[in-house]
Image 1 (cartoon, rainbow, N blue to C red):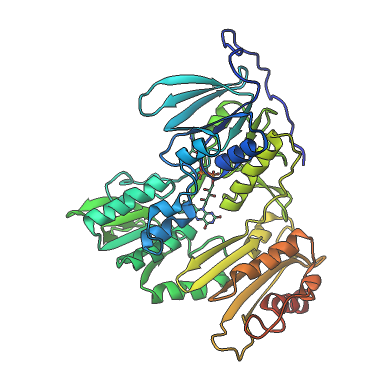
Image 2 (cartoon, rainbow, N blue to C red; image 1 turned 30 degrees about the horizontal axis):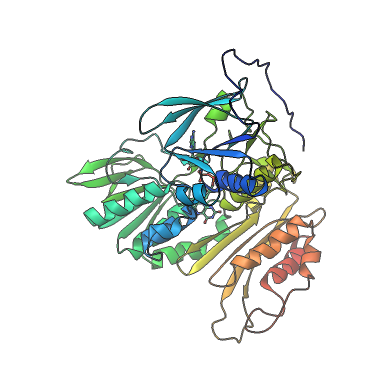
Length: 480
Ligand code: FAD
């Protein structure tokens, strides 16, 4: 895959920047979470002599955002458990010059400098780089509806967001919560808030929860959420939040109807933090995330980017897409670090493989859903070459105590049997089975090869034909 490297527009260094004082190996990294710190750590491991400076505008580096719902829900005892690395450990043990509460406000490619503001003192400064890494991640979307700044209305992205929410809950003991948005963070948080004893509502504009799954794969989990006490309002958006007798009223659709609650979590999606890159003239992709080549170069050869702020190459679609998830952020950051240290490592691409816990259920997905495959237009103009089948099968031998049914769906290209994607939903044995399909897709296996893969079998662990293989057999029979 080729993107044109080099500058897009002629740039010339402005006079007056003193470049003498800096070392020839100054790597500046913008953003100190998964991607930024993976890059920083890798460079310092490979090239001890490099000066690695990380600017982080927030209050933490390297934290597990993915663990935040479980801290709020009480499964994880302390927020400190979510910290992978502190600034002190990064500085003292890894030799990384971490500068907290420092925001990079501009990139001057001609001078190879960045403009920085100390958020505590307001003091501006300029820093020279030899190589720059943009790892600015993504931000939670705040929809343009009234009331988003009211006390008690939260978004969840940084660890400090969850700390604010946690403190608010401790101070005010809310009785009821509304989660606006039924994607994976909304659903995980609904469970966390039920675990904390609240009345919980999810308001989702689309007619289904978990919109990155096909509609026929979410029915059981939708019922399960209701069984667990989550009140679902599907196919209706919120028109805003207002104060009502010391509580919050979340308006629904174009009606006067409202849900009264004490806490509102807005989880309607994220957007890439790519403005800094765009302002510096770096190319963005269709999603407005930063365009990188397979070595994570941006359109400037001295500037790399990784993590939730970039598009990745999708292995099935063979095009760049924006699917912001932790594994690609960590790997992308590490690959940037390797390449800056002199290696020649390519990022292999993504499938958007993901897994989510929803109370007693696990939902997992890899590659394309049927809806995404049809919408891509790559498998017939009407999606006529998209084939799929869904089955239900036991996760262990049917007679094994506690055996549970898994619902599995495979999506294939009918013309050649190539596997395009899979979704698995069930109470057990779901998370690693999706990885079988992710591996099969990456290896370019067809559905008949998947059906005959030599997978393990013993009654306590799986049936003699794994559910994934049962599904492969059914797809072949039904659609090929
Ligand atoms: P970020 O984590 O967004 O970090 C970017 C950093 O850059 C931030 O700390 C930000 O303050 C800093 N920054 C931005 N701009 C500047 C600037 N101009 N100057 C200085 N600093 C700047 N993914 C999964 O795969 N599985 C999960 O189960 C999962 N669960 C999640 C649950 C929640 C509640 C959330 C919020 C996310 C979850 N994710 C999950 C997503 C995962 O957390 C992200 O994919 C990952 O954090 C991306 O890492 P990153 O370093 O690219 O970006």
